[in-house]
Length: 274
Image (cartoon, rainbow, N blue to C red):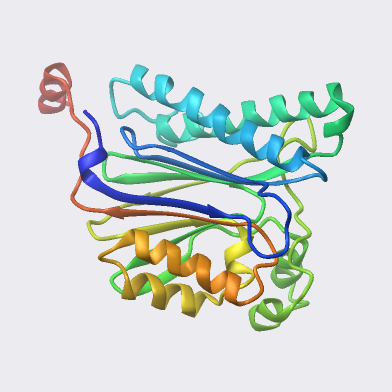
């Protein structure tokens, strides 16, 4: 069953006012409610190579793997939903492809990318991220960042050297401590959360959150929640108005109605006697 009717979605990307080309990559599969955003780095065109590989790999690997899952099972080793493990493994595979490409092609040496992705299933969302691309949620007028940046600045905040307010004013925000393609393996941060109707999820590159305060992002989405296209365009406009120093990518997903997983007749019978 396609999840398209269950969500309103929007995806936009803009080069910004300073960069010569766009190293961000975004993509989605609306039938399974999968959204992926990557922010590449590495000089010349290598950054966009890395981010492009990341998004394509996840979009290629996750859908067929999800189709093979006929039940809402959990992984015995981690206790996580199988959908979360599928998302993690796809990102791990993308890391290997980027790392191997960088080794084989001199012009791509040193390239890497951050990534944030979410996959909706059975009234829940699986979230996976590496680096400082972010995912936020707006629920009943409460706006919160769900991912924690893998960055030097965030580590300093965690250790008490900076307050969150001081970190927000810092000019050294972009030193990431984790990215795809840098090492042969990568640790992917995972979360599983319950989803409620009318929730709005925002995936964005740091070209947005470095230029626009969270309060202004919150106000913009709240004001234009009935028109996601307008909300996305306004977020990019705000970032450019504040300098547009980096590429800006925005993805929005608004939950229209519940999306429980279908269960087979055999599963229903088993649940009766379990």
